[in-house]
Structure formats: C-alpha cells, structure tokens
Image 1 (cartoon, rainbow, N blue to C red):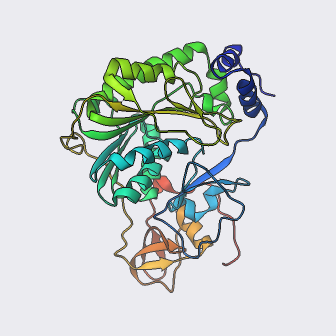
Image 2 (image 1 turned 45 degrees about the vertical axis):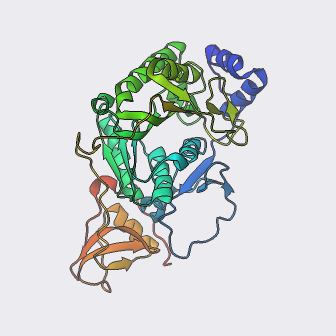
Image 3 (image 1 turned 90 degrees about the horizontal axis):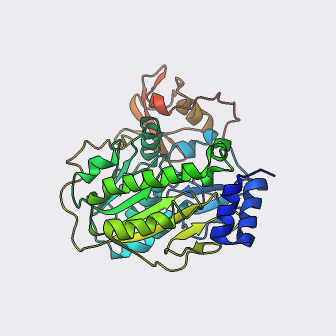
Length: 392
C-alpha cells in the first residue's frame, strides 16, 4: 500500500468524507490504472471488427476501457489517428463541451489554452465536427516547447484540418478582446490525478505546491480572460482533487473575473457534484485517474469578434496528400514505414504515393522503382525496434 502525505489524506477526508476518502486512497494505493481509448469517428479502418470485451465509457460516445494494455506503439492505427489513448475521467471534459454545444451557432471559435498532450483537443475536435461539420475553428495552444512538439504531433495524427496549434503565452491571447466563443483551460496543477502513473507527482506534492498551483492557475485565467467573448463559455478543468485548485478557483472566477457557474445536470455513474457547482471524478468511484471540471458563462452578451488567426501564425496539421495514389500495405510494411525504414514496393505505382493501412492514410512516400523513399516525418517515427510479423 502506497504511503500518502498526511496533509493529502486529511484534505480528502475533509472534502469528500471519510468513506469516500478511504475508497480513493485504496484505489490510488493498490489498484492498477485502467486502459482507456477514444476512437476517432472520422477515421475508421476498413473491415473493422466489433469491440469484443471493451467496456464503454458512460460519458463518452467513442470511449472504451480495454481489458488489458496492448503495445500501442506497434499498432499502425494508433499512429494513423484512428484512436487516442486518454484517461476515461478526462473524457468527461468532452462531455461537458457536448452539453453546451447546442446553444452555439455554426462558425464557433474555441481555444484550448493548455492543450498538451492533446487528448481534450482531439475530443473537442470530434465533437465540434460532429455538430458543425467544417464550420468551426479550434486552436490548441501549449506554451512549453517540449510539450508543444507532442501536441503538434498528436493533432497532426488526428488529422482534422480545422484544428491549429500554437505555442504562445496566455497573455498573447488576452491582448485581443472577444475572439473566442469557448475557452477550455485544463490548467497546470498539483497532479494528484497522476499519483498512480507518475511517482514523482506524489513525491513533489505538498500544501505549498497546491497553493502555488492555485495562484498560477488564476494568473493564467486572468491573462487569457479578455479573449473570451461576453456570454462565452469557460470550461475549467484540473486533474486534482483538492478544493483550493478546484471549487476555490471556480468561485474566484465567478466573483473576480465575472461569470456564472452553469448547472449542466448530473455527471454520471460515480461522478460527484461539488459545492461550487463543479464535477469531481475520483479514483475508486470511477474507472480513471481523476478529474475536476466546471463550466461557467462569462458575464455580458455578445458575439465573438476579430480574427483569431490574425494575432499569430497558426501551424495547421499537415494533411496527407490524398491526391497521390493510395497504396495499402500490410502491418509489417506499415510499421517499417513508421519506423523510417526504406521500403521496396515493386507492385506500387512509380512516383508520389500515400501509403495506407486498412484503408487509413499513414503518410507520403516516393516510389522510384527499385526502392521507395520514406517521407514520414522524422520527429514522429517509431524509435523502438520493429519485430517481424507473419504476413497478413
């Protein structure tokens, strides 16, 4: 059983009660993390089989829990953006977005302010596209350059051309007023929801860290707040369980920045409602690592104005050149391609190709006959050794 700081256990008991606290601590200390994925509804492979043995995530139409963890790196469909590996409790943020979309008009503009690694961005992209088709804009931002690289790769793999990625300080957005209809802030936090996955998160936790994170979260929100139009929607999220970073900040947003906390109904199985109107997903109560979220409407009434693409150069996903002939390959060839290996495709057309696996585009290659030049981006290639597979 994992030992937790006394201040942490005291906080849990005071916030959620001794019985719930005991369930959370037991889950964090002795249960293995779940294995969740979320499908991309716009990238379905050919000859897709039923999800035998998969358990649906109640609050995500495309989310499932797997019975065991496969090696995702060795699945070409993972690299092709057919699905995203995302904590099931984090998927609830996407459910809250879906609950407010009916009041939005086509052309909605959304900013995911602290977007890396891209789980909530890709979830939002799917929901926006399902409701509005091409009539939306979603910007995913990450100020940390190393995390931005991961975000950019995941957004490109997802493959939605209406999603752009940027790496700007939140204050850069705040210099433009009323640009966005929806602002998602999954703010950097003390990481209590990472305790099972990252031992460093537990080692670095302290009441002082919680206070520091709460102050930083308020600064981020203050800096970006002007970019949200009057009457626009803020989705505030953390992966913590403590009230300082959660309900405390939601009340601060409402009182100091000027917003109304929205009641969007009950959350779902195991999801708790908090005193300030938020939603708490806790390990032991739900099959996930933990999430907090609340939805607020900015005071005032007005439409988004200005051009979100005017204040920076958005780096858009690089779509696969589907004008080039498509050439479907087996799993071994797909993995060799994703590894960056030179290929030999004697039956493929000569010239620029789009390689596919089970009908899903992987990326470009140039066949020159005796060999095929690999044009898959170097920063996205598989680094582990590729095993040999029997022919499919």
